[in-house]
Length: 190
Image 1 (cartoon, rainbow, N blue to C red):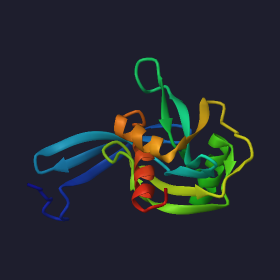
Image 2: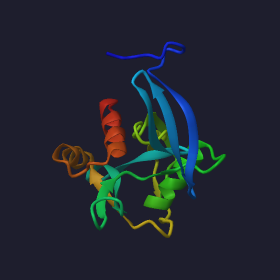
Image 3: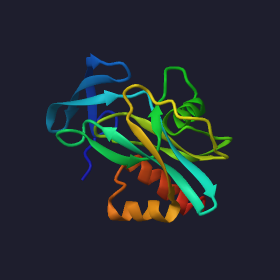
Image 4: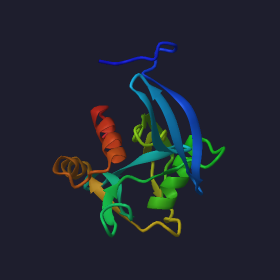
């Protein structure tokens, strides 16, 4: 049963918000909430937003998607390399499509002639206010990758059938990548 605050119809009210830490890209906030059961504190990440790209290539072997293997230091005790689609954070004042084109080149080395929107979604609304815009990228030309110094990425062309099988097997377990691939597949774009 959903409970609502008597004055505004929401189940809780934010009483106060304070910044715990401001990093290079993100801000960490603590929020004091009032619910019908009393007061509590939650912490979360304030995020400028991001993009995820589904690069689509037509090859002699058939349609492929460009996936990256990306080192994620927060996974496990020593970090982990996982399969993902290229993605990145929107810089202050930067239009979303500019971010998409920039990140595609940085992480994969491909430039797209056309981006098709797949939608937008909250990545983890219990922890952050991050909104991610998803795009399919077409008309790819290889121009050379330009990864940032803290990115450890390898790029691979993967047949669509294999990418879908990787999702089913749990080998591709990155949520943003799964959302983009399955959305494009459902729309007949793959």
